[in-house]
Amino acid sequence: RLLISDEMTMKVGDIYFIKWEDSQGCPMGWAAFDDCKNRSLAIIESVGWVSQIDERAVTLTPNIATNNGEPNCVSGFVTIPKSAILKKKKLRLSA
Image (tube, rainbow, N blue to C red; front, side, top):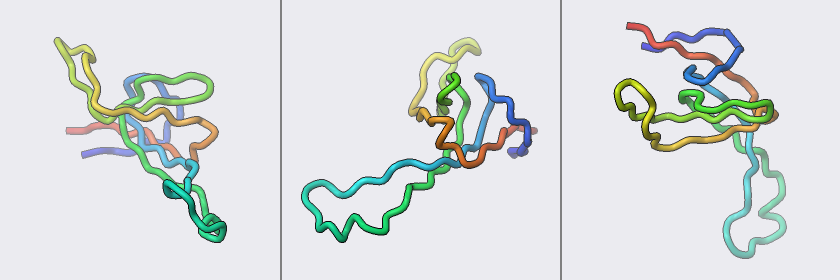
């Protein structure tokens, strides 16, 4: 079960839900000019452990393998510009 916290101080090892916006592109190849009108930004929702954070971005990692309790390998990660974040919630595991 996950509990949601309003705490906004992110640090490496925390688990977060982040809702953010990103660019959207046209399909590969040529497209009619009208096909590119009235497009909006993509809204993306991501959940994962904070594996890196700096003044410009945060990296979430959804899958982490450990060796003797220490992070060893990851499967997937996404680096999100802080300027693109619309909403964020710290998640906490509970028994």
